[in-house]
Length: 481
Image 1 (tube, rainbow, N blue to C red):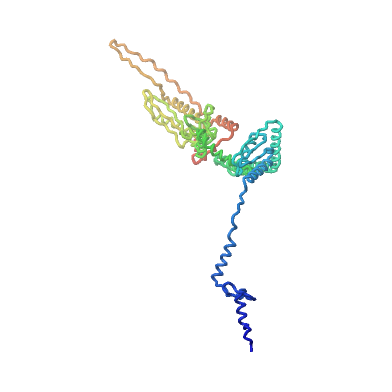
Image 2: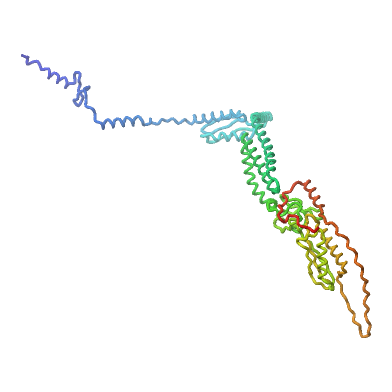
């Protein structure tokens, strides 16, 4: 039997737990400390995790890391001083910086060097004012040293560029040889009766293209392509000024191109243009040159030739001549026509097709004007000579037939007066027997001007014209044997 004075064990445990004594202390809410607790719910876990992540990703509070004014001044001074020390012409310049004010002291060899140092100082960030206290050193020794250093640097640079310059020069030489070869090759492809000006234009264009390509490659090799661009830009701007200043020259040049392409005449053609007659010597870029029958040179601007009426006597080889003879009013005109027609047909230089033609042209006071026409081939006959021979032979034929060719005359008849005095007529001259007509002289073409023109071309060079293509009109016509 237990003693009633001893408390039971259960009561001792309850008391110990209440007072927090023992291995299981109680919290303020009465829960066991260190014992197994219930797991928290999911919402509280997500909130705690998000808060923890937000605390990890937030940047730290900013700190005051901006440099002081003194540190910034020292940084400007050191950077600028280092720049000056690396440049030969700027060495010896002392730099002081205070509150953003840069003070430059020392001596420089040239005024341009002083401006260069001032410009470099103003480019730095944080510079407020540049106080330039530099002095230009005019001593001969320092300037000579600076000049010599510059020349030495240029010489070293040139020696460094020497391989590139030699390669560029080789490219230029190869280009010059290539453009000449291309011109010769192209010359062999254009043969026959093609326009020489077009041939020359294409040849020069190809040569210019080859030379421009070679120069561009050479300049690119030495790193000087800006020269090519500057030349192109300058040529474009200068072209406008030249166009206004040399309008007449450009107009004559374009007219020469059009005349060469249209082909209104060929070398040695006998033409009449702008009131001048002569044979074509040459067509240059600015003017058309004629040689008159007297052997004189006539230079006509191409613009005037292009805008004028051009009569080409040589383009059609068949040419007609004509002359007039007056016969007496009492003569038989039909007999005169037949006699003149027969005489022209018997001339070996007068063509049968087209046939000669004799027309009664005009009735005068004391004579009848008869016109004689004939055709000839001017490639084989001299125009002046054949006309002269025709006049001589026709006149001889009319003289042989006793056909009078009176000169203009006025007759005065006196009527007998009241005194019966009669006016005696002057005695008529006895008829003279006709003189025999000399045979026809040859009327071969005169090549005097042609030889002079050929000699002129040998001295002055070739022209821009080529012989015009001949069609059916260029075929030699039939002549009388």
